Image 1 (cartoon, one colour):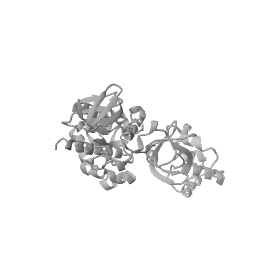
Image 2 (spheres, rainbow, N blue to C red; image 1 turned 180 degrees about the horizontal axis):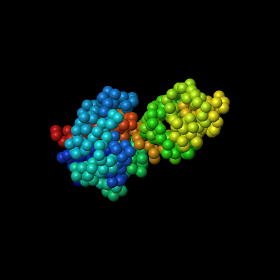
Image 3 (cartoon, rainbow, N blue to C red; image 1 turned 135 degrees about the vertical axis):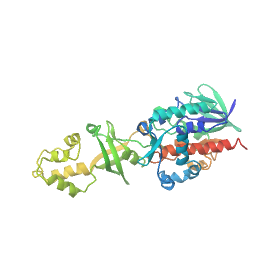
Image 4 (cartoon, rainbow, N blue to C red; image 1 turned 90 degrees about the horizontal axis):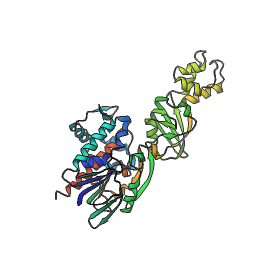
Length: 389
Protein backbone atom coordinates (compact mmCIF):
# COMPACT_ATOMS: atom_id res chain seq x y z
CA UNK A 1 0.00 0.00 0.00
CA UNK A 2 1.19 3.51 -0.81
CA UNK A 3 -0.10 6.00 1.78
CA UNK A 4 -0.95 9.57 0.86
CA UNK A 5 0.94 10.72 3.97
CA UNK A 6 3.34 9.33 6.54
CA UNK A 7 3.63 11.31 9.79
CA UNK A 8 6.82 10.60 11.71
CA UNK A 9 6.24 11.45 15.35
CA UNK A 10 3.08 11.51 17.48
CA UNK A 11 3.80 14.52 19.65
CA UNK A 12 1.83 17.76 19.63
CA UNK A 13 2.18 18.69 15.96
CA UNK A 14 2.12 15.09 14.73
CA UNK A 15 -1.15 14.37 16.51
CA UNK A 16 -2.68 17.61 15.29
CA UNK A 17 -1.64 16.74 11.74
CA UNK A 18 -3.24 13.32 12.10
CA UNK A 19 -6.48 14.85 13.38
CA UNK A 20 -6.53 17.15 10.37
CA UNK A 21 -5.61 14.50 7.80
CA UNK A 22 -9.32 13.80 7.06
CA UNK A 23 -9.76 11.89 3.77
CA UNK A 24 -6.08 11.10 3.21
CA UNK A 25 -4.75 7.60 3.72
CA UNK A 26 -2.35 8.31 6.57
CA UNK A 27 0.08 6.31 8.68
CA UNK A 28 1.59 7.65 11.93
CA UNK A 29 4.78 6.37 13.54
CA UNK A 30 6.08 6.96 17.07
CA UNK A 31 8.77 5.53 19.33
CA UNK A 32 6.30 5.28 22.20
CA UNK A 33 2.56 5.26 22.47
CA UNK A 34 2.52 8.97 21.53
CA UNK A 35 1.93 12.32 23.29
CA UNK A 36 4.45 11.51 26.04
CA UNK A 37 5.98 14.99 26.20
CA UNK A 38 2.65 16.77 25.84
CA UNK A 39 1.31 14.88 28.85
CA UNK A 40 3.85 16.52 31.20
CA UNK A 41 3.83 20.11 29.92
CA UNK A 42 2.84 23.18 31.93
CA UNK A 43 2.97 21.51 35.36
CA UNK A 44 0.00 19.33 34.36
CA UNK A 45 -1.90 22.36 32.97
CA UNK A 46 -0.81 22.69 29.34
CA UNK A 47 -0.18 26.25 28.22
CA UNK A 48 -2.01 25.85 24.92
CA UNK A 49 -1.17 29.35 23.66
CA UNK A 50 -0.86 32.94 24.88
CA UNK A 51 -3.27 35.90 24.95
CA UNK A 52 -0.94 38.65 23.69
CA UNK A 53 -1.28 40.29 20.26
CA UNK A 54 0.19 38.74 17.11
CA UNK A 55 3.08 41.17 16.57
CA UNK A 56 4.25 40.84 20.15
CA UNK A 57 3.64 37.09 19.85
CA UNK A 58 6.05 36.87 16.91
CA UNK A 59 8.71 38.77 18.83
CA UNK A 60 8.80 35.98 21.41
CA UNK A 61 10.58 33.74 18.88
CA UNK A 62 13.52 36.12 18.39
CA UNK A 63 15.10 36.58 14.99
CA UNK A 64 13.31 33.56 13.50
CA UNK A 65 9.83 34.75 14.46
CA UNK A 66 9.01 36.11 11.01
CA UNK A 67 9.12 32.54 9.69
CA UNK A 68 5.82 31.90 11.50
CA UNK A 69 3.96 34.88 10.03
CA UNK A 70 2.34 32.87 7.20
CA UNK A 71 1.28 29.93 9.35
CA UNK A 72 -0.11 32.30 11.99
CA UNK A 73 -2.07 34.09 9.29
CA UNK A 74 -3.60 30.75 8.35
CA UNK A 75 -4.14 29.34 11.85
CA UNK A 76 -3.51 31.37 15.00
CA UNK A 77 -4.66 31.42 18.62
CA UNK A 78 -8.28 32.33 17.85
CA UNK A 79 -8.66 29.36 15.50
CA UNK A 80 -6.82 27.11 17.96
CA UNK A 81 -9.02 28.10 20.90
CA UNK A 82 -12.16 27.61 18.79
CA UNK A 83 -10.95 24.18 17.67
CA UNK A 84 -10.42 22.91 21.19
CA UNK A 85 -13.57 24.46 22.61
CA UNK A 86 -15.56 22.75 19.84
CA UNK A 87 -13.78 19.54 20.81
CA UNK A 88 -15.04 19.81 24.38
CA UNK A 89 -12.08 21.39 26.18
CA UNK A 90 -12.66 24.28 28.59
CA UNK A 91 -9.94 26.90 28.30
CA UNK A 92 -9.20 30.01 30.33
CA UNK A 93 -6.77 32.93 29.91
CA UNK A 94 -4.77 33.25 33.12
CA UNK A 95 -1.74 35.56 33.41
CA UNK A 96 -1.82 35.86 29.60
CA UNK A 97 -1.58 32.08 29.23
CA UNK A 98 -4.39 30.04 27.70
CA UNK A 99 -4.56 26.95 29.88
CA UNK A 100 -6.85 23.98 30.45
CA UNK A 101 -9.58 24.91 32.92
CA UNK A 102 -10.42 21.47 34.22
CA UNK A 103 -8.42 18.73 32.50
CA UNK A 104 -4.78 17.88 33.22
CA UNK A 105 -2.07 17.78 30.55
CA UNK A 106 -2.19 13.99 30.71
CA UNK A 107 -5.95 13.92 30.08
CA UNK A 108 -5.52 16.44 27.27
CA UNK A 109 -2.77 14.36 25.66
CA UNK A 110 -4.81 11.14 25.88
CA UNK A 111 -7.80 12.85 24.28
CA UNK A 112 -5.69 14.10 21.36
CA UNK A 113 -4.06 10.70 21.00
CA UNK A 114 -7.43 8.92 20.84
CA UNK A 115 -8.80 11.45 18.35
CA UNK A 116 -5.72 11.13 16.15
CA UNK A 117 -5.77 7.32 16.21
CA UNK A 118 -9.39 7.36 15.00
CA UNK A 119 -8.58 9.85 12.22
CA UNK A 120 -5.83 7.92 10.42
CA UNK A 121 -5.58 4.72 8.44
CA UNK A 122 -2.87 3.21 10.62
CA UNK A 123 -1.25 4.25 13.91
CA UNK A 124 2.10 2.52 14.47
CA UNK A 125 3.02 3.06 18.12
CA UNK A 126 6.34 1.69 19.38
CA UNK A 127 7.53 1.47 15.79
CA UNK A 128 10.09 4.23 15.15
CA UNK A 129 11.20 5.13 11.65
CA UNK A 130 14.93 4.50 11.32
CA UNK A 131 15.49 5.52 7.71
CA UNK A 132 13.75 7.36 4.87
CA UNK A 133 14.76 7.44 1.23
CA UNK A 134 13.00 8.51 -1.93
CA UNK A 135 12.57 6.66 -5.21
CA UNK A 136 11.16 9.01 -7.85
CA UNK A 137 7.93 10.35 -6.31
CA UNK A 138 7.60 7.78 -3.51
CA UNK A 139 9.16 7.86 -0.04
CA UNK A 140 10.38 4.60 1.43
CA UNK A 141 10.20 4.44 5.22
CA UNK A 142 11.99 1.69 7.11
CA UNK A 143 11.25 0.64 10.67
CA UNK A 144 12.66 -2.29 12.64
CA UNK A 145 9.52 -4.20 11.73
CA UNK A 146 8.66 -3.39 8.14
CA UNK A 147 8.91 -1.11 5.13
CA UNK A 148 6.28 1.49 4.22
CA UNK A 149 5.60 3.71 1.22
CA UNK A 150 4.10 7.22 1.07
CA UNK A 151 3.61 10.06 -1.38
CA UNK A 152 4.32 12.68 1.29
CA UNK A 153 6.19 12.68 4.59
CA UNK A 154 5.73 15.02 7.55
CA UNK A 155 8.63 15.04 10.01
CA UNK A 156 7.01 15.87 13.35
CA UNK A 157 9.50 14.08 15.55
CA UNK A 158 10.68 16.96 17.76
CA UNK A 159 14.17 17.85 18.93
CA UNK A 160 16.37 16.36 21.67
CA UNK A 161 14.66 17.58 24.84
CA UNK A 162 13.32 15.00 27.30
CA UNK A 163 14.68 12.08 25.21
CA UNK A 164 12.85 9.60 27.46
CA UNK A 165 9.61 10.81 25.84
CA UNK A 166 10.91 9.87 22.38
CA UNK A 167 12.39 13.14 21.12
CA UNK A 168 16.02 12.05 21.16
CA UNK A 169 17.23 13.91 18.05
CA UNK A 170 17.34 10.85 15.80
CA UNK A 171 15.17 12.58 13.19
CA UNK A 172 17.95 15.07 12.53
CA UNK A 173 19.85 12.27 10.81
CA UNK A 174 16.82 11.52 8.62
CA UNK A 175 16.55 15.20 7.66
CA UNK A 176 20.29 15.34 6.92
CA UNK A 177 20.08 12.27 4.69
CA UNK A 178 17.29 13.99 2.74
CA UNK A 179 19.58 16.97 2.15
CA UNK A 180 18.90 19.33 5.06
CA UNK A 181 21.35 21.24 7.21
CA UNK A 182 20.99 21.20 11.00
CA UNK A 183 21.62 24.23 13.20
CA UNK A 184 23.45 22.83 16.24
CA UNK A 185 20.87 21.73 18.85
CA UNK A 186 21.19 23.07 22.40
CA UNK A 187 18.99 22.54 25.47
CA UNK A 188 16.52 25.39 26.07
CA UNK A 189 13.82 25.97 28.68
CA UNK A 190 16.17 24.04 30.90
CA UNK A 191 17.06 24.44 34.60
CA UNK A 192 20.51 25.51 35.74
CA UNK A 193 22.74 22.89 37.30
CA UNK A 194 25.02 24.16 40.06
CA UNK A 195 26.77 23.17 43.27
CA UNK A 196 26.49 24.56 46.78
CA UNK A 197 22.71 25.16 46.78
CA UNK A 198 21.56 21.67 47.71
CA UNK A 199 20.80 22.81 51.28
CA UNK A 200 18.27 25.27 49.81
CA UNK A 201 16.38 22.49 48.01
CA UNK A 202 12.64 23.05 48.00
CA UNK A 203 12.73 26.79 48.69
CA UNK A 204 10.84 28.91 46.15
CA UNK A 205 10.79 32.67 45.61
CA UNK A 206 8.40 34.83 43.63
CA UNK A 207 9.24 37.73 41.33
CA UNK A 208 12.99 37.84 41.95
CA UNK A 209 15.43 39.66 39.68
CA UNK A 210 18.02 37.44 37.97
CA UNK A 211 21.17 38.64 36.25
CA UNK A 212 23.16 36.14 34.19
CA UNK A 213 26.73 37.13 33.38
CA UNK A 214 28.66 35.17 30.76
CA UNK A 215 32.19 35.86 29.55
CA UNK A 216 30.92 38.40 27.01
CA UNK A 217 27.27 39.21 27.73
CA UNK A 218 24.80 40.01 30.48
CA UNK A 219 21.12 38.98 30.57
CA UNK A 220 18.33 39.85 33.01
CA UNK A 221 14.95 38.36 33.88
CA UNK A 222 12.22 38.77 36.49
CA UNK A 223 10.12 35.89 37.72
CA UNK A 224 9.74 32.91 40.03
CA UNK A 225 12.52 30.46 40.90
CA UNK A 226 12.85 27.17 42.76
CA UNK A 227 15.95 25.61 44.34
CA UNK A 228 16.19 21.90 43.54
CA UNK A 229 18.48 19.03 44.46
CA UNK A 230 20.56 19.67 41.34
CA UNK A 231 20.40 23.48 41.01
CA UNK A 232 17.84 26.17 40.23
CA UNK A 233 14.65 25.98 38.18
CA UNK A 234 11.45 27.97 37.73
CA UNK A 235 9.98 30.15 34.96
CA UNK A 236 12.60 32.92 35.22
CA UNK A 237 15.46 30.44 34.95
CA UNK A 238 13.85 28.60 32.03
CA UNK A 239 13.45 31.93 30.21
CA UNK A 240 17.11 32.86 30.80
CA UNK A 241 18.25 29.46 29.54
CA UNK A 242 17.32 30.34 25.94
CA UNK A 243 20.47 32.48 25.77
CA UNK A 244 23.58 30.90 24.29
CA UNK A 245 26.11 30.03 27.00
CA UNK A 246 27.71 27.07 28.70
CA UNK A 247 29.02 28.40 32.01
CA UNK A 248 27.99 31.65 33.70
CA UNK A 249 27.53 33.48 36.98
CA UNK A 250 24.00 34.00 38.21
CA UNK A 251 23.17 36.86 40.57
CA UNK A 252 19.84 36.78 42.42
CA UNK A 253 18.14 39.81 43.92
CA UNK A 254 15.50 38.25 46.17
CA UNK A 255 13.94 41.50 47.37
CA UNK A 256 14.03 43.93 44.44
CA UNK A 257 15.09 46.85 46.65
CA UNK A 258 18.19 49.04 46.72
CA UNK A 259 21.16 48.43 49.00
CA UNK A 260 20.60 51.55 51.13
CA UNK A 261 16.98 50.61 51.74
CA UNK A 262 17.98 47.16 52.99
CA UNK A 263 20.73 48.59 55.21
CA UNK A 264 18.22 50.91 56.84
CA UNK A 265 15.91 47.97 57.46
CA UNK A 266 18.73 45.97 59.06
CA UNK A 267 19.88 48.77 61.37
CA UNK A 268 16.62 50.56 62.17
CA UNK A 269 16.09 48.56 65.39
CA UNK A 270 18.70 46.88 67.55
CA UNK A 271 17.53 43.31 67.06
CA UNK A 272 19.41 40.14 66.15
CA UNK A 273 20.17 40.37 62.45
CA UNK A 274 18.96 36.83 61.81
CA UNK A 275 15.56 37.67 63.28
CA UNK A 276 15.29 40.82 61.16
CA UNK A 277 16.05 38.89 57.99
CA UNK A 278 13.61 36.12 58.98
CA UNK A 279 10.84 38.73 58.82
CA UNK A 280 11.37 38.96 55.06
CA UNK A 281 13.02 35.64 54.08
CA UNK A 282 12.31 31.94 54.81
CA UNK A 283 13.80 30.70 58.08
CA UNK A 284 15.73 27.86 56.42
CA UNK A 285 17.32 30.26 53.94
CA UNK A 286 18.38 32.61 56.76
CA UNK A 287 19.82 29.79 58.89
CA UNK A 288 21.83 28.60 55.90
CA UNK A 289 23.03 31.94 54.52
CA UNK A 290 23.24 34.45 57.40
CA UNK A 291 26.20 33.40 59.52
CA UNK A 292 26.34 36.14 62.15
CA UNK A 293 24.14 36.02 65.25
CA UNK A 294 24.96 39.57 66.35
CA UNK A 295 22.61 42.40 67.08
CA UNK A 296 22.43 44.97 64.29
CA UNK A 297 24.23 47.65 66.31
CA UNK A 298 27.11 45.27 66.95
CA UNK A 299 27.60 44.18 63.34
CA UNK A 300 30.50 45.62 61.36
CA UNK A 301 30.09 47.29 57.98
CA UNK A 302 31.70 44.23 56.39
CA UNK A 303 29.21 41.86 58.04
CA UNK A 304 26.27 44.02 57.01
CA UNK A 305 27.61 44.21 53.47
CA UNK A 306 27.87 40.41 53.30
CA UNK A 307 24.24 40.07 54.35
CA UNK A 308 23.13 42.68 51.81
CA UNK A 309 25.02 40.85 49.06
CA UNK A 310 23.46 37.51 50.03
CA UNK A 311 19.98 39.01 49.63
CA UNK A 312 20.49 41.38 46.71
CA UNK A 313 23.40 39.78 44.83
CA UNK A 314 23.31 36.12 45.76
CA UNK A 315 25.99 34.67 43.49
CA UNK A 316 26.23 31.13 42.16
CA UNK A 317 28.15 29.48 39.32
CA UNK A 318 25.73 27.81 36.90
CA UNK A 319 25.59 25.85 33.68
CA UNK A 320 22.71 24.61 31.60
CA UNK A 321 21.53 21.17 32.58
CA UNK A 322 21.47 18.50 29.89
CA UNK A 323 18.77 17.66 27.35
CA UNK A 324 17.39 15.19 29.91
CA UNK A 325 15.94 18.12 31.86
CA UNK A 326 15.20 20.46 28.92
CA UNK A 327 11.65 21.26 27.84
CA UNK A 328 12.66 22.65 24.43
CA UNK A 329 15.48 22.25 21.91
CA UNK A 330 17.16 25.31 20.42
CA UNK A 331 18.46 24.66 16.90
CA UNK A 332 17.24 22.08 14.40
CA UNK A 333 16.49 21.93 10.68
CA UNK A 334 17.53 25.19 9.03
CA UNK A 335 14.58 27.46 8.23
CA UNK A 336 16.32 28.63 5.07
CA UNK A 337 15.52 25.25 3.55
CA UNK A 338 11.78 25.27 4.41
CA UNK A 339 9.02 27.20 2.65
CA UNK A 340 7.21 29.17 5.43
CA UNK A 341 3.97 29.32 3.39
CA UNK A 342 3.67 25.52 3.12
CA UNK A 343 6.21 23.97 5.56
CA UNK A 344 7.53 21.98 2.61
CA UNK A 345 11.20 21.33 2.06
CA UNK A 346 12.80 23.50 -0.61
CA UNK A 347 15.16 20.61 -1.34
CA UNK A 348 12.95 17.51 -1.39
CA UNK A 349 9.45 17.71 -2.83
CA UNK A 350 6.80 16.08 -0.68
CA UNK A 351 8.83 16.40 2.53
CA UNK A 352 7.27 18.63 5.20
CA UNK A 353 8.20 19.78 8.69
CA UNK A 354 6.36 21.03 11.77
CA UNK A 355 7.14 21.87 15.36
CA UNK A 356 10.32 21.56 17.34
CA UNK A 357 12.40 19.73 14.75
CA UNK A 358 12.83 23.12 13.05
CA UNK A 359 15.18 25.86 14.21
CA UNK A 360 12.54 27.98 15.91
CA UNK A 361 11.84 28.31 19.61
CA UNK A 362 9.64 30.65 21.63
CA UNK A 363 9.44 31.88 25.19
CA UNK A 364 7.72 29.88 27.90
CA UNK A 365 4.00 30.42 28.25
CA UNK A 366 2.36 28.59 25.34
CA UNK A 367 4.45 29.97 22.49
CA UNK A 368 6.07 26.68 21.48
CA UNK A 369 2.78 24.79 21.52
CA UNK A 370 1.16 27.48 19.37
CA UNK A 371 4.02 27.19 16.87
CA UNK A 372 3.59 23.41 16.83
CA UNK A 373 -0.15 23.63 16.17
CA UNK A 374 0.16 26.40 13.56
CA UNK A 375 2.98 24.80 11.56
CA UNK A 376 1.18 21.46 11.69
CA UNK A 377 -2.02 23.00 10.35
CA UNK A 378 -0.08 24.87 7.66
CA UNK A 379 1.68 21.70 6.51
CA UNK A 380 -1.57 19.73 6.39
CA UNK A 381 -3.33 22.49 4.50
CA UNK A 382 -0.63 22.32 1.86
CA UNK A 383 -0.57 18.52 1.69
CA UNK A 384 -4.37 18.18 1.39
CA UNK A 385 -4.51 20.82 -1.35
CA UNK A 386 -2.49 18.48 -3.58
CA UNK A 387 -5.23 15.90 -3.50
CA UNK A 388 -7.94 18.40 -4.43
CA UNK A 389 -6.40 19.43 -7.72
